[in-house]
Structures are given as structure tokens and as C-alpha cells.
Image (cartoon, rainbow, N blue to C red; front, side, top):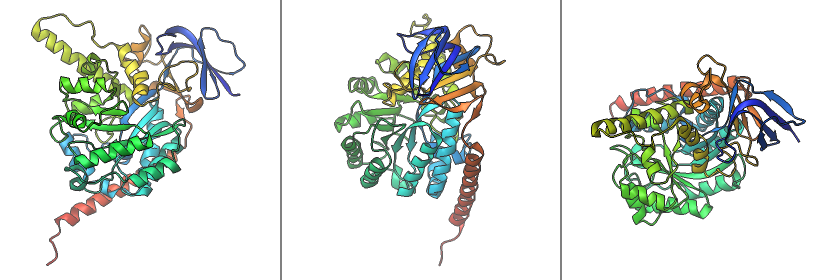
Amino acid sequence: MAKILLKGGTVLSVDPEIGDRTTGDVLIEDDKITAVEANLDADAEVVDCAGKIVIPGFVDTHRHTWETAIRNSAPNATLDDYFVEILDTFAPLYRAEDVYSSNLAGSLECLNAGITTLVDWSHINNTPEHADAAVQGLTEAGIRAQYAYGSANTSLEKYWFFSAEEIPGDDVRRVRSTHIPGDDGLLTMAIATRGPGFTQDQVVQAEWGLARELGIPITVHVGMGRMAGRFGMVEQLDRLGLLGPDTTYVHCCYFSDHEWQRVADTGGTISIAAQVETQMGHGWPPVNKARKFGLRPSLSIDVVTTVPGDMFTQIRAAFGAERARVNAVCWDLDVPIPEDMLTAKDMLKMATLDGAHVAGLEDRTGSLTPGKQADVVVIDATAVNVGPIHDPAGAVTLCADVSNVEHVLVAGQFVKRDFALTADVARAMSLVQDSRDHLVAAAADAAVAKQEPAPA
């Protein structure tokens, strides 16, 4: 039995029964955490964590990982721009190998930043080979991932304007039986549905029904901006009798109070991508709104075409936007700041344990709890941008960045050690750069072709 002892760090367990330890040890045996205590002795490989902060791995509950090859291609995009510049320009040109390279490099990006669990919202299944490639990229990277099988994206008009196109059930069943037959491995499965506002009612019903037939969860964008159905999407799902505890609602910027209550009453979960929402015009990140209805919102990156791919950015975007909104309201009303104002510790929980809850994995990750999988991040707190430490949770959420992520373990295996990923990063980057070159050239050719006069 392989044993690793993370020794002498400041331990933020995100487990209310264990609490935090100014100086503590975390013992890992094979793929599990077996003890979180002070001054543990064990016949194990000892990793000196003095001057470090030990936390659970971050959980990203919604990322279109396939877009890694077109990173930063739309830095100034609004949400409306994104549909044209990304979904109608690049997505139809993706080959299966571009999905593979993007998922591989994108997953390594996550691990490098301390994100150990990823919900891959994969709406690039233009062929069955595209789906296979997405799964292969996630698997090879060694990340814990929920592969959320989405639609094809070969035409904006066909797939996003009141679409009659269903996700192909036979191929979803094939991926489920061939690649992800169970729910207890590093890779699990979900359905990424376009939902109401984008598809016709029979499509919505068919895709929810498919997920429930296969016993896998559902993730759907709702309540975001003009193009993306800000009016009554949850109400429509409710009328169709589809609300349930197996569904994650992404963004949720324009929910009515009744919709919030219905999501809470039916056990739904929430994913908020604060940097995207504030930057691209989805709406204000509804962090406290979700919390007021007893929900546990999680954080997600969404699209690296337009925002950074690390959780530190999302934590600060959500923290700053929500506190700014509350401060402005309290100033205008001349009332005190409420007691439920977000704290740095709230944000750490949101990025770890609450994310695991939303991904359906709270029983195996999200906190440093004995018996859970050893998904662990060690942050260098001696760095000039982090130390000296007064509030460890504040140091992680408001000071640290990707450069401070020293070690990362997934299921007890080092995927990053001594500030370097253990994977073949050069190969992954070479592949994704080749995909970038292909996609940029193909998009240019397509633009030229559109300008050519029609044949006589």
C-alpha cells in the first residue's frame, strides 16, 4: 500500500467536523485520505509542507474544455458575440483531433491551477469520433471529470434557434456503455442539454428523458442575457414536469423568486461563472441570491476564449461582484451591511466542497475528510505574493495564484509536483497549437468562401 504523508502544513480541511489546523498532517494511503491530524507518524513518503497551505482540490462545475485550442480568440466578446464568433465560426470546423488536443491541454491547465475535478460541458459532438476524442483527452490527463455529452455544433441556426435536433441517444448510450459504464471511476457522465429557449419542447423532454433512462445527471444553461432565454426557462421546465435533483442550472442571472424557490424545492444545484457573467453580459452573478434560498452555489470557468481558466479568478470575480452589489444597495438605502456578507472562507468552500456537491461527488471529494479520495492541493505560502499569513483562507482566495500551486494530487497520485506537471506538457501544447493553426486557417478559408459570388 502506497502511503504519502503531507507533513506540517496549515491544513484547511473544508470539513466542519475536522476544521482547520495551523500545523497539521494529511495521511494518504493509495487513493484515499486516511487521517488529518497533528503530528502523525507513519511509514510513508513524507512531503514537507512547512510554510504551505493544504486544501482540497478545486472543483470547476462547468467548462467548455473543447475551446482550449481557440483560447483568447474572443477577448472582447459579449454573449451575443460568442454565439457568432465561436459557435458559428469555429465549432463547425473542429475535427475529432482538435477536441482531443483541447481536452488534453485544457485538463492539464486545470490540474496546473489546482482544479482536480472538472465538469466538461462538451457541446462539440459533431460526430461520434468527436465524443470519443473528448473522453480520451480527459482520461489521458488524469483529471477527475464528469463528461457532459452535449449536442453537435455544425450550424447556429440548426442547433440554437428553437432547435428540433435532439442529442443522439444511441451515441450517448454507446459512450455510456463503452467508455463510462459506471459512476465510481475518475470519469463519470452527464448530459449537457441546451434546454428550453434554445430547443423545442419535444427535444427538452427527450434529452431529460435520455439522462434519466441512463441514470446520469443533467446540466443546462439558464437565465442569461438577451439571446439566452432570460425569461422563464425554469418555469417552462416546471410546466413540462422536468425539475429534479439531478439537474444543475448554470448562470441563473435572471431567475424570478418563484424560479429560485422551485429549484430549491426540487433539489436542483447551481453553477456560477462570475468572470464570464460580469464580463460578457450574462447578468450579475447570483451568489447570495442562491444562498438565500438554501442552495449551495458552485463556481465554474465556462469559456477560455474570453476569460482565464483558473479558479482563483472566479473566486475573486464572484467575491468582488457580490460584495460590490450588496455594498451599493446598502449605501443607497443607508442601512448596515448584512451579516450574510460573503467571506473569504465562504469562497473557499464554494470552490471546493460546494463544487463537489454540484458535481454529484461530495461523497468522494471536495474536503480533506478521511475516507474521501485524496484530491489535494498544496500552495506555497512563503511566496512574495502570499506570505506572511494572517488568514489562511484569505491567503488562498485573495492572494494566491496559479504560480503558487506547488503540488496537486488526484486520487492519491501526484499530477503536479514541485511546481511542475508530471504529464508530457510539451506534447499536449504541440498538439493544441497544431489544432489552433488548423482552425484559424479553416476559419479564414470559410470567411473567403462566404464572400464569393454564387455560381451562375
